[in-house]
Length: 134
Length: 361
Image 1 (spheres, chains in turn yellow, red):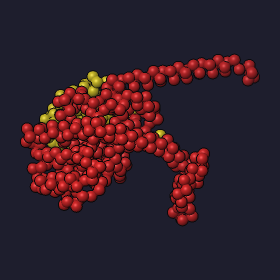
Image 2: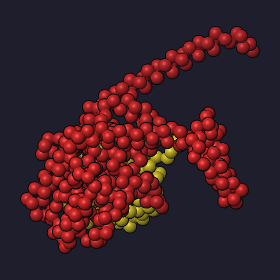
Image 3: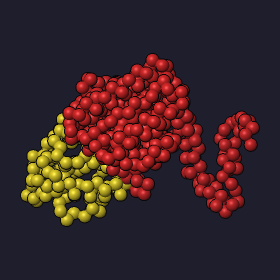
Image 4: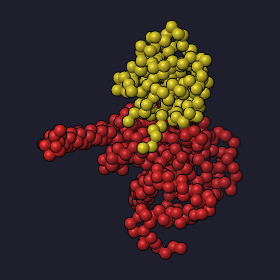
């Protein structure tokens, strides 16, 4: 049986043009052997959720540096749930105050990486937690 | 201790139950399979995308599903878009989707990007240019990584096309990786091929070369606001007018496409490109060329399937048994040559052995 490829989507929902971090992550995931769908900035949660489903990804990484994560991240999770796609793991990153962590975890975000998180630690988390579906 | 014979009825009882469970689960699996097929043919994106993934990963059950879907395929118009990296394939694909949607046609897009030969990973970024269609249910965009295929596409692209055909998409646009001079696998999959060119990529000798320019059904010269666009148009036209008579029935038109940000003109030019592509399809149908293309495609698919059924299992067996490694060592030490090794292996695996040797020595 050939090994299954991990498919990851990196997206930036909302009005936030700071995509350096997202791009670095996309490259880092490529070098880790994942297939990365990079979709760029300024997307609505609806666009993000639809793209994640069309691409059949295992993991959706949301980046937000604008402070709108409290609205946008839970909305994406909710849209995936509505479309019967809760098996797609959603993680988040960016400028996110620790005070918001619990709220985001409760909303279904599985992990949060803030400035200072090493690339290795993120890749490690994915390798440990993502099992490609059968 | 009971003897075996005393146990026999009990064992038989359990065997009977086990048989029922097996047939039951087989029955259940069959129902599930039919359900999946039904949903995909009704256009279910989730299941379709997942099946494409399973086909990419070469899972055995995926092929079984594809077999069931095959009768539903073959009705879509397949357009190929190819050209060098950065020529504007994704942007033109995006605009072409918009044109197709204006005509109320449902669209499937397969966008191929390269896999890293070092890590096996890939960045699939064609979608960035097509974001505006993300929420349109009439548009299904799926990115594929080449996974080592060299012809400008991914090995799974033919299968993925079938899945989208089965979903009932009217038009399927296949965007190749950014290509050089001879990655022309797209002609085996598409009805009509658009070759996107940009000015400033070399003199007319480049235009005269074989390969990519021969496969175009429609040329798009993109970024015509750049220097050299007119010259490229002249060179291409003179090349086409010098083409041999056998090609004269369809002379690939050249569509000039300017700056995306001059929106009104750009949209007009895209409408022209879409029209030329439909013209070409009509030509294929009227001239009987469509049949020839379909035959070429069928041949290629049978070829691929044979390779999949015959060559790959043999190589897999040789790899797991370690024989391939041993042969490689012998070849390195010059104790053995690859040709004799292949002959010996084929004699073992093919019943007819060398009998069908056609005398090519």
